[in-house]
Image (tube, rainbow, N blue to C red; front, top):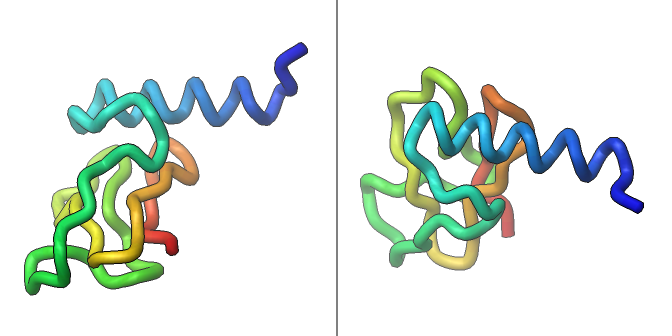
Length: 74
């Protein structure tokens, strides 16, 4: 049986993907090597209305927290 939290995370992930054109699998965004245009660890990398960088520094991936916020996590 799927927990309510897992369902909520799935729905939020799909919603963000539909709004900003991100992949529908959390943590599946491409990680580039450290680059001035990529977000540093712990920084915001996406979410509804986000206009900043959607790539993360090497060693991190962009993880969806909710519809409005994704963060570069190790």
